[in-house]
Amino acid sequence: MDFSESELIKLRRSFMNLEHYVSRRNYKGYDPYDILMSKFPFKKLGKWPPIIAIQIFKRNPLNLRKLFAVPKGWNPKGLGLFLHGYSLLPKSEENEKKCQWLFEKLLELRTPDTPGMAWGYNFPWASPEKYLEAWSPTSVVSGFIVQGLDAYYKKYGDKRALEAMNQVCVFLTEALYHSDIENDYMISYSTVKADFCYNASLLAAQAYALTYAHTRQPAYYDIARKALDTVVSRQKSDGSWNYSENLQTKKQRVQIDFHQGFIIDSSVAISEALDYCPEHVERALQEGFEFYRDYQFKRDGRAVWRLPGDYPADIHHQAQGIITAINYHKYSRSRRGVDLGKNVLKFTLENFQDKRGYFYYRKHKNFTDRTSYMRWGNAWMFLAMASMLNAAEVQKTDKNIFSPLGREKPVAQ
Image (tube, helix red, strand yellow):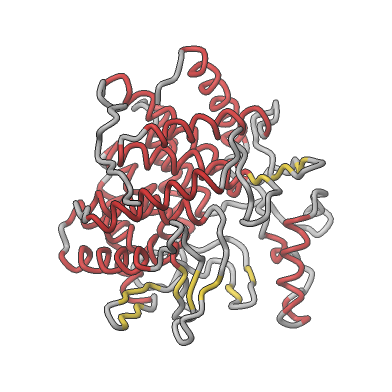
């Protein structure tokens, strides 16, 4: 990214403040969805009380978790994001030690009694579709951890990380539902049911693709390619994707938010890991990114929460905007990624970061929820800023990084 020296100094200072905050707390903290860790028997009251409790506690600007005896904990997905972020920083003995600690903590927290290796959230969570117990493994949590393992292996060469990636693929293959229907290939979110959540299927496919890039397992290539093509085929004419699809009725769940960034990121990563860049994938990525940039962010860099709604601005989407902008920029060599990434970063640092280093949860139209969430906000911003610092380092060695030509092609009108 084309940062001035003063911009880089500000970014490094903000990052160091966050790193100091999270490392002093040993990467433990609260989560918007952790209320079911309370000893209050929400689940015994029926299906809906746990769902309602989660919604109340994640929306309440008053953090009542101490009152309900909710403990701070290690969230495996959060640890995977921290591992990914540290692995993007320059090599150093200190950074390597932190990566090793995070990696070994992840091994300790993996879900027991499951094929291969997998992770879930450290708390139970409930939705109208399913209830997952604490540590119930999913393609989403395991998929993001694979991204951290991949970055760690590339930076420090720890072969245990590559073996862990292989073991995650065993889990994805043996414990999740794979639906192969009329040339559509879908991988389930969890072990509970066969479902088709677009970003979850792609996160599993990305885990296969990243592992394939190291091992050249043909089966991993085939699964990742077919899953990518299936999600690309679900893109709407405006460039966006819905959230999920009922496999029986084909009805789609309309939910346009930060998951758009997940889909773009995974599509880029799969395309690059497989060296699979056909025209329909490139076109989908360009149109998808243009929708993401034009409709999901304001000109000042504030993310809208969920279309068509405008507020609140949520730290998860702020961080995702930075990450997706960087990933799309590296893929396409487009100025569009540069401009969005810098814009979102500037707004986020000015409006979300507390003087103690952590990041606020949400900015509503008339007030700010200043709750600190370790996974939802701090881990994602740690990865976002580490990615931005990494991109700034790449700029120093790649003089053509801002070429207006690159891979990007004009969209047919």
